[in-house]
Length: 297
Ligand SMILES: C[S@@+](CC[C@H](N)C(=O)[O-])C[C@H]1O[C@@H](n2cnc3c(N)ncnc32)[C@H](O)[C@@H]1O
Image (cartoon, rainbow, N blue to C red; front, side, top):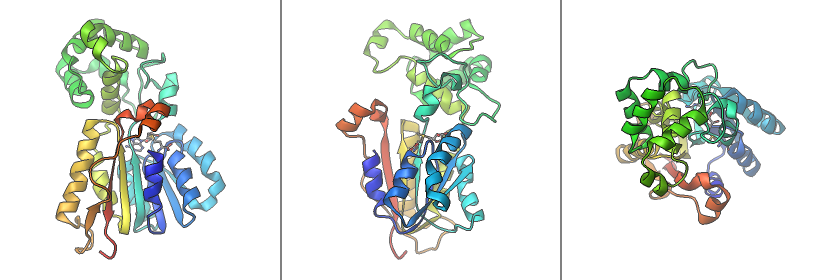
């Protein structure tokens, strides 16, 4: 979805662009290369990602400012950095390829590693804590709400019989065996995909701060500024759509000039093209939504 995002970035007023999920700075570097009149403030809660991003962005000197934080604090950190308004913001949610590809981080059902899944290694709760200590009903809720997992009950029964679990491949195999063979044959992707997604969302408390973060960043948009959110599952997309639509319907959020007026940058959600899907199958579930503050409002 990089091309779509860059074509929107092309349209922004000059000023500060906030990347709330900086990751390895793929979008960050492309933004600074494309728009010499933009400065980047990049946020991530993962030290490893920030280290990699810092190296890639060092070529841009003072045009790139990095912050280690959860993104719900981004708006207040921008104000503390004397940035009262922004030209745009991007949230590319979920997990990054470097997080997935290092077994030790425990995000992948394909690579053996500890059941960890913390984006911020300073946090104490891991996936192992959740799998091994939650009550059965709580675990079923997590798998249903964050993974849309239809076989949550069977998976949780199997977890209860096998506890304690300690590795990713142990859990992945248990989930595969717990799902009925017919459903396993029909499912697209690995049978443990939804369980791992649900646990990752629970470990990192990904949804609880999303809506308020989107509102706080919309409040910072300058006239003509655009907010972009790229989601990878239905829960994230629903929150994003609802918050943006509410702002478009109601106008100014508390704390904004009463004249502020918003519109969709485009209708609905954009999805990845066939070409992109061939290069990056992970983009299959990606949905891009964008909101713009109208000029002179
Ligand atoms: C999909 S990756 C972003 C990749 C990035 N757009 C790029 O071009 O390299 C998501 C990143 O967001 C970070 N992240 C996810 N939730 C976060 C949160 N609540 N606060 C701060 N960072 C978060 C993750 O640590 C990860 O590095």
